[in-house]
Image (cartoon, rainbow, N blue to C red; front, top):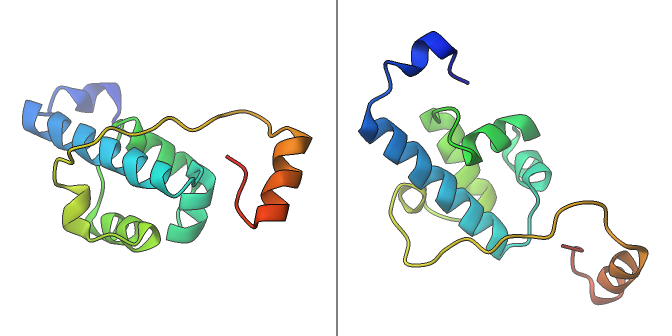
Length: 111
């Protein structure tokens, strides 16, 4: 995460790229019904790191970008390319018992 004195060195292009990666992560993660924690587990990252990337608070190193792409089953370039769709917000907060039971029966994750 950038410290306050470092934010002055961030260009518009850098901010735009961070936003693009953030939007694409949310898009691909949402399509799979993955939580930030689930994506972090798959990618071998900490959940707060995924959160910071998705809020465009921090830049992404190439190794991290590659890990995220692999975890999502997409090409790294797809995380850097503008997509024609918008992320679908996932339900947040604690899961209701009925959702968990239904998800177990269908073999899907509760979202």
